[in-house]
Image (cartoon, rainbow, N blue to C red; front, top):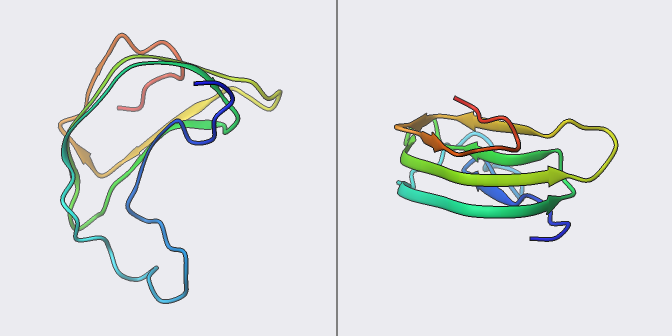
Length: 98
């Protein structure tokens, strides 16, 4: 990846219009693997896993992730919300969420 926005993202709170912000997602997300991802990012939050409070993501694995944030207002961050059974191995950048 080169200079991408949101390189690793699951966002079940995405709300493009009025009225959806009060309805948690009912979509089940499970058994997701992000592996061997390297490159540069233009968004500070390089890893964003924001899952539904009513239907948490399950069994998400991050393996061998190395993303460099290229803008000067760093450091990069990672966010994980409502994720059950997260596995993190070989993650260099950003610091993994737990």
